[in-house]
Amino acid sequence: MKNSFGILLFVLIAGCSPKVDVDKLPKLNGYWEIEKVVFPDGSTKTYEVNASVDFIQINGKEGFRKKMQPQFDGSFRTSDDAERFTVIDKSGILIMSYANAEQTWEETLVALLDDQFEVVNQAGISYHYKRYQPLNLNQ
Image 1 (cartoon, rainbow, N blue to C red):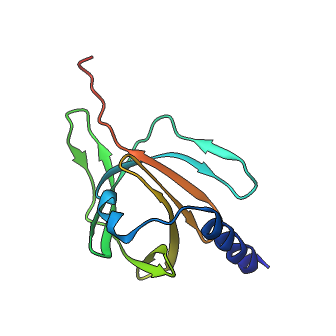
Image 2 (cartoon, rainbow, N blue to C red):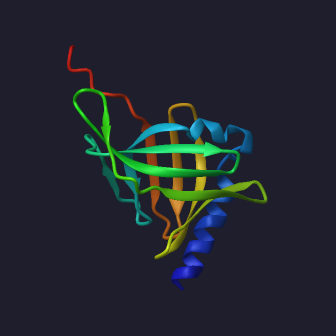
């Protein structure tokens, strides 16, 4: 039943959302912070402040995502860990497919603009990101 719900949600999202073009994938490059998460029941969790941001680098249909901790001096602290992904085009729907030694998972790329993007995971949870803007403490 859980798997059927995920498939149904995927079909609804795919049918109702404008498709993200493969040639727009380079817009993912850069630093992103989570803005909000929308759960399948419609509840929302917003993030006013983020202790970490995601750095995404994509070349063609392959890339990686890495957690970064912004520092007050404008630099970032991070580990060497990065989640590699491949973008799979399923009839015009772009799927970010991740795999590591412990698990595999997918996220459907629902929207991609210059300053925001949205993905939905297999559990139907929608993640909304906005382009990271460093804190300016001189203001």
